[in-house]
Length: 145
Length: 190
Image 1 (cartoon, one colour):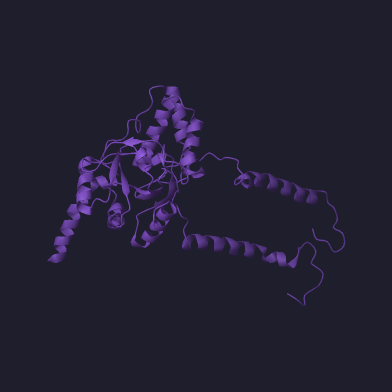
Image 2 (image 1 turned 60 degrees about the vertical axis):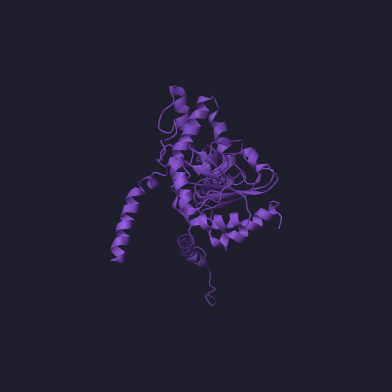
């Protein structure tokens, strides 16, 4: 009879642990689920939030995510926008704390430049190959096309 | 392939080139296999290591322990800053290790994330209270300020209030020597 009792205890504990899934039982931060009063500011905040990574659900943006931490970050973004801060300054502030990973906006840096250069290089390469093909140059002896 | 050193066939390209797609496929296969066997770390490390704690003054987590502010970290002695919450299961798992560190004389301060006083009190009554001070961060303000992305996390802060090390996830028994070593690096006497 030891195990049924343990099971019952677990079920009871699990049912009391409901706030656990909510990651805290506090009401959300003021601007987590409330838009800013000024539509222009809200639009600015929304555009920024869509390009910031949620740290709890890492493939979502903080605008998409229902995680508590994303809510707190939306609150911070909206309050900073409300205080008149520039969205790119807020992004820089977050990057200072979490690194480039927090931002979905691609930046041209010493690390990322190959990503930007690769398409250009590939197009150039393709043009060169096509040129060889279309100019109809006959390969010299022992050379391959 | 040796012994077949005839002229390359017209329009056929070099003979070895025929293996290129297979080699490419093998490369991709190895890449995917590697990703399956060793999944990428998805922890987001704080970029604040090496920088000073931001200015904050949090209200007391519950009445049993004093409140927490930045100035408390400039007392000249390295401290641990533990980010926790009563709703966080791994935080309960690291409680014995925090207790052991506190018993070894390591000063530990806590920041409770999105938590209620009564829940903090219940959690500490159940799992022990290793904290010298506890602040309550209801809107993750300080958590974001120090680049922490979840609970539990533990920061080593030196006597000047500069973050020296970040430990992500619960401190397990095997992590204690590393934490102690980092505290010594931050200026804790042997």
